[in-house]
Structure formats: C-alpha cells, structure tokens
Image (cartoon, rainbow, N blue to C red; front, top):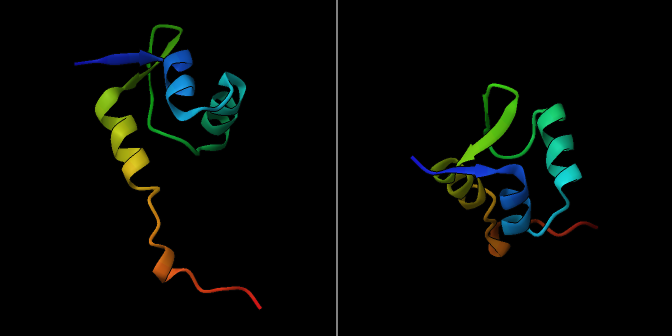
Length: 64
C-alpha cells in the first residue's frame, strides 16, 4: 500500500498544502486517513478522486 504525505498530494494536484487542509476540514478533497497524528493519502484513493473530477465539456450546459 502506497501512502502519500499531504505535501506530496498537494504537489501532484498543483495546489497549496493549506488548500488540501481546508478541503479536509470541509469534507472535500480526496479521502485520507490518519496514522497517529499524521495525515496520509492512499495513492489509489487520490487517483480515483482525480478521475471522478473529469467533466465532459459536451455535457456542460452554458449559462445565459
């Protein structure tokens, strides 16, 4: 099982670590787990979360 640090996930997503922390606090973002006091992310969970964010541009209804 591959576990990633928050800094690793933030770098992969191109976001600040603080944004990732805000997402955790608000229930958004990829699933995570705690190992003692440390936050870790499973690689498969991050990949699945990213895949779930893909949007089909053809399915988007333009605003008026």
